[in-house]
Length: 353
Image 1: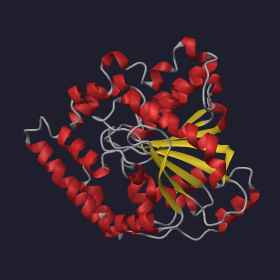
Image 2: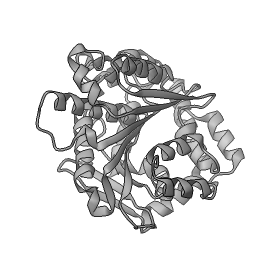
Image 3: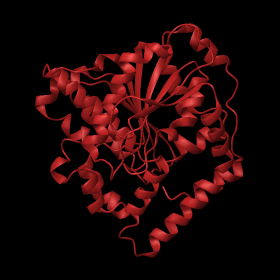
C-alpha cells in the first residue's frame, strides 16, 4: 500500500498538472499559510492521534489499498457505546482517515465511538471505488463493532464535504439494493441517522462550479467516471427517480449542516437535496449556519473550543432517549481551545477553501 503522504503528493501533483496561471500559485501559498496558522492545534491533535491509547489506527476492513479505518474509543468502557462512522473530505483526491481525528477525539470524550473510514482517492481509484470502499467499511463496523465495545444497534453515518457526497451515495445505493431484494452484508436499518456536513449531492450542478474554483472539468469527469455516471452518483437526482420510491422509505433520518458562506460547495446543495428527500416522503432537514465557511464548521470552530452548536446538535441526536448520557453532556466541561483566536481569524481570512 502506498504511504498516505505519497498519495497526497500525487493528488497535489494531479491538481497542479495543467496549472499555468497565477491563481493556482496563490492558492497553494494560501493553503500553506492556512495550515501554518492552525499548526498549534494540528500538533496537539497529531500527538493524541499517534500516542493516545484511545486511538486504534489502521484497522484493516478490506483487501484493497487504503481499506483501513481508525477507531476512537471512550475512556469509559461501561456498556456498549453508540458509534459514528465518519467519512472525511478532500476533494476526492487528498482525503485521509486522520483528517477526522479532531472529531473522533472530541466525540470519544462524550462516550461515542468513532470509526474514521479511509478509501481510495483519485487517481488510485474513481468514484465507484470510493463508494465500494466506504460501503465495505460501514459493513465492517455494522458486523464487528461489538468487539470494540460498540452497539451495533446504534450506528450513525456521517460525512464531510466529498466524504458527505460519498457516504450519501453509499447510503442510497444500499437502500436501493435492499428495496430490490439483493443480498447485502449490512442493512440501512442499522443506521439510525445520517449527518452530512458541507456536502454536494448533485454532480450536474457542481461540475461548472468546481471548474471555476480550480478543480478542472477534465479532472472532475475522470474522478466521476464521465458525465454518463453523474446520475448514478448524484443522490439528489437519483432519489427523485420513481423507481427508487421504496428505497426512499428505507432511509434513516437525514440531517444536513451547511454554512451560508461556503464557497467551495454552496449551501444550496444541502437545501436542494433536503427538498428532494421531503418530496419522496423521507425524513430530512437542513440546518444552516449564517456566515460560516466550508472549513469553519469542521476545523476552525472545533479548534476554537468552548460551545459548538453543530457538535452539540449531533451529540444530542445520538444521545436522544439516554437520560444518563444527556445529563453527562449537560455537565460536560467546555471543550479545550487548541488555537488562539487571532490565528483562527487570520486562517479564515486567507483560507483557500
